Length: 349
Length: 76
Picture 1 (cartoon, rainbow over the protein chains, first blue to last red):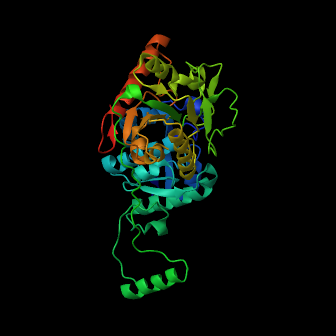
Picture 2 (cartoon, helix red, strand yellow):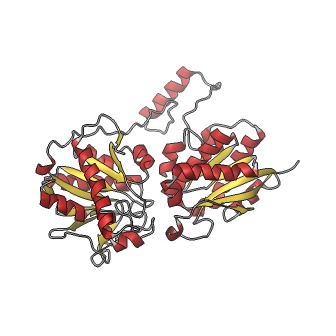
Picture 3 (cartoon, one colour):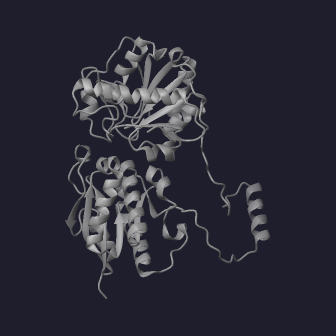
């Protein structure tokens, strides 16, 4: 039997083209396996082989979603693959969104078995878990050794038309699809077992997890901008030059509060970005590109807004845990309310 | 972060380039921006034009604050 043909999608970083300064490269196709493709070839053994690798910059993909999808679909079509794999993206947000988007497009538009992989907190996971198979990985590339065989195993199952097991058996992120099967014990027994375990403080697993719809209702609109104080908050890592609070370039454990009393403009001499997840050149040249103090000051002078709050808040949203972001924002909101701020503009990179 | 600020009681506009992420996260008022490394700018423009561009986006965000929304809304 000949080997299944596999096309693999990776970003500029895993193709070893470069980091953030190369995140804007358009898609290109290379023959054979590149970077993590080698781990996949090993995992596929003699059953499948990466015949071609498509590389695209993470920023380019996300800033040109439709064009990126179409260009890459054309490249994939030419290779007539039996299997498509993307990533894994681990905890890289833009890479996760790219992997999810292209995997979904391959599955629906080309009808080719497709698998990707990422960390559960990657924004791409929530966006695409119900649409494509996403193997759950850890949050760093150190997990490649374990992730590649899981992705390869599921991809081969799909290519051979074998039945895919439950998410827990085949290591993918639950996609909300339920299957009927016969339990060994009847429902009443299982329910009583669960109840006893619960009463005794022992672990038990519910058979019907409640969906986690964590939505917040929109706050009412501001009636008159000219009477309110507005604060600027960013996950783009803008800090006074030298990063006095040592906010981490990724996986931030803190946020900064910076006084901008009398500051009309965030200049290159005074401010920079601490964020390690995007090309910092532009924000370092002019931090108003991320935190628009200059424009807000003009609106303040003209009376369009009542006041620009004299402090801005900043952290780096780069692989930062959801729990940390939540904690930062709760504290920021508390301080803003204590300072009688009325509304917030939050910028993200 | 957007969600926690809104939950605490402050209306908030999320200005970001990758709006699908913002929708997934749960922002209610969303204003799309220019590019990931320079959401509110464009280094290829002259400083004057770049300032105008930024002013336009911030104006849109301020308008978004004055509009009642029932559900997640992207202000294109």
